[in-house]
Length: 110
Length: 113
Image 1 (cartoon, rainbow over the protein chains, first blue to last red):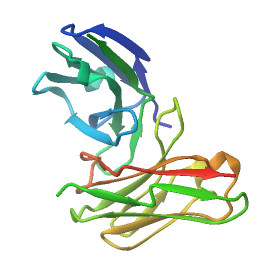
Image 2 (image 1 turned 180 degrees about the horizontal axis):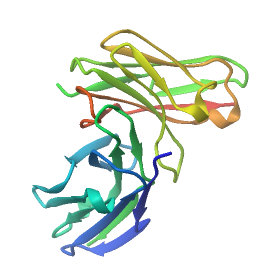
Image 3 (image 1 turned 60 degrees about the horizontal axis):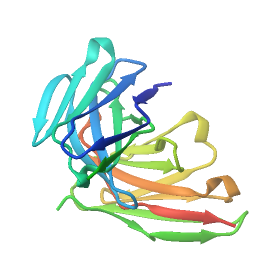
């Protein structure tokens, strides 16, 4: 079945540093979605794009569909960015199935 | 309002007993999902409804049932809970077809004793 691999599993940064999170998927995806979860919190959608690059605030999502990979860049990290970032892959256009990776746990230190 | 609501937030169940979890959304979304989340694991897709059509994952086909009596509500039913069912259960919804943006509820934490 569809698989999603994320790296790194965990990341520790100093406040102000940039973060690059990777996502690789096993089959052709129509859409890659990035989610954020604060400890004990709900999953919140950050960005969703089928291909190319999309920005919101300090976040940039890049999806290279042909190479079955995507990335999330966080610029000028803040302590409040700490949490788990999950990527999820949507399959072909005629299915609503969405499969998740295990996530990257980010810790931003002062 | 992009709210997905799940009830209850916490559920205690005995081994062998049934469990019913509830999810609702008021966004008129076509698709509603149920995921199982265990610590340090990816959220695992159990099933989803697109409109009235139920899609269940092959490896959990016999373990979970669901119903969607109307567009807003979706339930997850476990006929006989086992210890391995202890997990966070996440409900999500999305608009249209083609894996659009998912909106998640806060989850129901199920503990089976």
